[in-house]
Length: 74
Image (cartoon, rainbow, N blue to C red; front, side):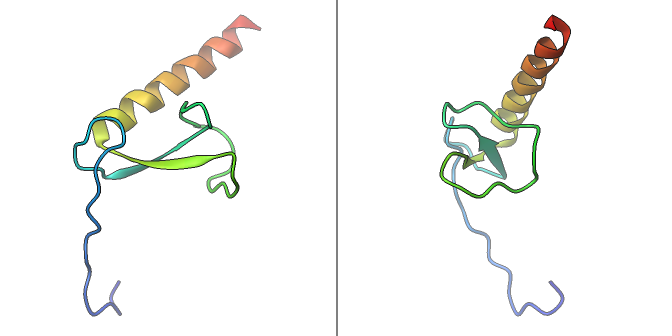
């Protein structure tokens, strides 16, 4: 960043609630957040969506709860 002449914000809105998006949520084709696996996924099966903090946090919490439920059910 110290070599940049200018920094410009790209404004976008949350996919789920239309508030200002500040995160990119990685999700599967069904829209469920992905919390495990590689940090960066390239391909047509996975998607990234702009999200606000509240939507990002709630979807990540849901994904972690679902993952914890899978481990305790085994």
